[in-house]
Image 1: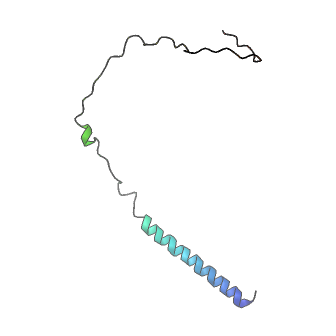
Image 2 (image 1 turned 45 degrees about the horizontal axis):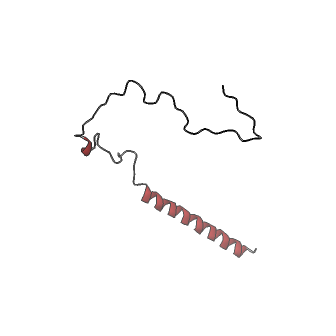
Image 3 (image 1 turned 60 degrees about the horizontal axis):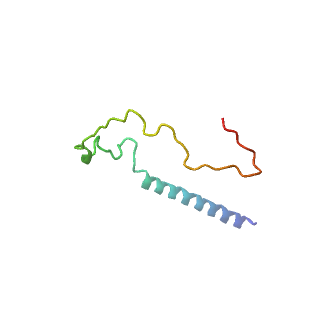
Length: 87
């Protein structure tokens, strides 16, 4: 490479770097509008449609409906498998 080509490569690199800085500054201005000092969108404490709802309470049954769950299907172990001992 001769001196003229080196100078062009340096100039091209400088132009690319400066373009990147300008692009990042522009993006910073565009997306930097939101500030931590300003509150974001604030939602009210109670939604308007929920302010006049009624609550219905029910008493749970004294005994669970199903005491012990039992399988509805049983299967046997195929031959060649180790038998399963039930406790």
